[in-house]
Image (cartoon, rainbow, N blue to C red; front, side, top):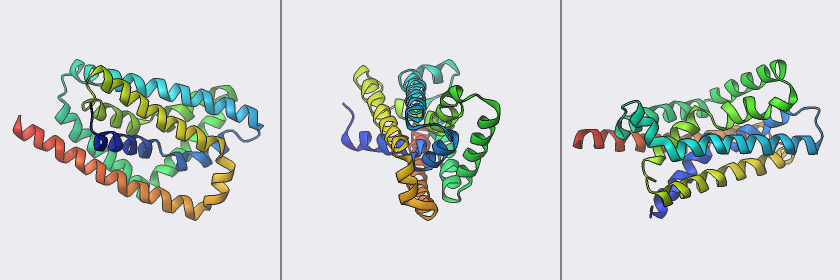
Length: 209
């Protein structure tokens, strides 16, 4: 059974990489012109798709690595570097700019009914950062119980994100641009620290192997 610290770190890592506060204003932009019922349909559909994608990587993460002949320590180093890059973007607000560009493309290229799948579920919710974090964490949740626990953690993070979507207008108004900027930077610093820990663990395992 994974320790509480491992479970908590997994929860924080996945939640930060999904970045609910950063997605709330984008959700409002993507669903502009919809009524509340339509917005909730989009939110539910996007959440289900993102959950399925991340759950697949949570359960089959090690199998995917083995298929490509990649060791878990090597992926910890590579994934940790990627998460550090995402943290860097969050701290300097570059990630938000990239997400907004993806949202703009979706509005012009896709019908409203497809917005939940792209870009809301993929790549905004289940993006490279969240997928990498999930595969990294799957190495620490290798048993059947561990897989269920990791999927449960992902489901909890997706549920929190859905709540943010449901309250997007109020949250966006409450935080304002300054509040979102401060919160995103704070989450970025936390993610950077977690990323460094992933890299350190990976290097230690490679040296001892």
